[in-house]
Image (cartoon, rainbow, N blue to C red; front, side):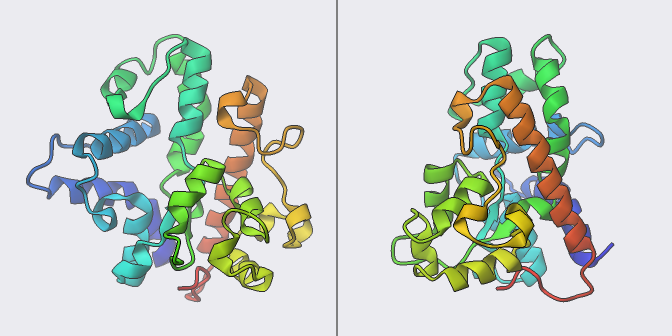
Length: 260
């Protein structure tokens, strides 16, 4: 295993250890082997109870990973999570239990306590693989530098709910995110290749009409409008993409595929 991939596979453990050094912390997290749902809910709780006071480089999985990779805080702050977990997870919980969970209400202890109850267990079983690979290099991307309109990750959530297929659609000319590439598709193509995202395109052809959406029959459907089959299809394709990117990163021999 390359040093880069090894660092990424231990990212969540490192984040928890970093938080333990924070003398004003509200609780002490523990990483539990073979309990990915508990670990990811604990991660969300950590950020919610602190209300944004934590250092991204120390306690955000993506920024922490890229800081270890480059030892450069400006580069690290361009890190982002390719596919977010919480928004689609809470939609699945709502469908299964009727409960609408909101991050700001800090429901994570309750969700951990109920994790094996009917409805909750079924959802957690479906999301366990995603939770397990959520904090691996295959789910991290390095965004381009900020433009005068701000950082890409803020606008990325607004237009795509942090799902990479819709994000890529918005990166092409005329899209909400195209300004980060100066309406230059060649610059965009270079970034896609650096981030090992060409597998999201048919036969690796990086064109707008060649994007392979995670939901083939209902492309780019909002999480809140997904049915159970669409959630399952989305998860299956997300897991394949993250594992594929992990394998690509594991095969590196020291060259920097991400690009700074």
